[in-house]
Image (cartoon, rainbow over all chains, first blue to last red; front, side, top):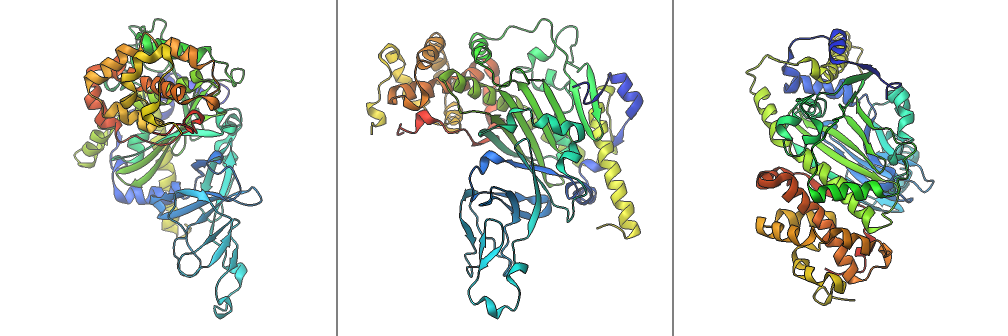
Length: 397
Length: 123
């Protein structure tokens, strides 16, 4: 991890990124949010799925990106390529399907039967000669799509300046080594939360709420030598962040069946044991990538719905079918433990949002160990500021 | 096809049969729902019955290929997986389980790996 990020202690990081309060408005103001969508979410590669969801030609998944009012179809073509189209017939705009997923050799609009191939080309349309347009000009509108480590990313911009690998720089190669790169299945938890995407993402960028919010599940993360469970180092790589968790020398003993579950998992053959590096990527803008143990890796993706609402998906990636009862047991335990822990944050995060959105506070306070939140905020501000300046010059797209 | 009423657990685990009806649910969302809809007494009784047997249950099931499990073995595996959910409730959340259940209910389990042992078992 140290080679990928510049690792700093809290004080060093504060020297670098600053101290003191930050403005509260960006965490609820609809005008600021609207500019974030333009400045960030329409200008970044965004994680939207995994190739194992569309394993065969003709498989598709449907995704709605509320922040851009973008209804998307992600399709594996007959040629094996993964493409993303707007779920919008080029005749008069009718959505081609409402199915969440499926398999089709072609997509026919239910309204007037315009029919498209899995590559988005218009194949046929009744009485097409009466439209006086060229078929090749009537393909489904396409969205830039790239795959990294099995993860599907889309870019809503008209002409992405760089690839998804460019966006993640040196971190991109790490995706190829993780279970997601070979995953044949995922376990997924989906939810919406009444919180600005930053308020919600920030919850996963500091650790000292564990003591209070995760009093039952967070025990191993704190101890007498570190009662707040602060990470030892914070990592920075361009707009992306990481942290090194403190290792508790004397963790509390787990209850009996929890211990058994943990030991069962540890005793199984671990397909990624040699490559395993404990990983905690907090990627800009909204993707958290965690590799907890050789067989346990997840992504947690946050997509804005409005200035005060976010839709998130947690996906755990499995590089093979379970080969034994103990493997199935270990995986159920890994995913349900994670769901249990992440469920505990909900009330606190929503209460924070309600308080901030009341407008009572002009600023919010961050301590040195909240430097990842500060860094995240600074990355957002830089892009919104640039966007606003471009708009003022009339040079924004 | 066997029906749920006719399924019997492997004989050495017959004492667990009273728990089949509520806990032997055939996917992770259904097992999570079994936790959510259970009473504290139901969870404690299942936890007390399974805890001393779970290592033995897994050792036994590990001798079987998942895709070739019969109805009783698949049912036993589904109960072992439901036990994961109950362990989290009884050993981790303890008295916070009702509050946690309310927060957890928003976290919908929306996709999972195909469970080959459940393809033959009607529920």
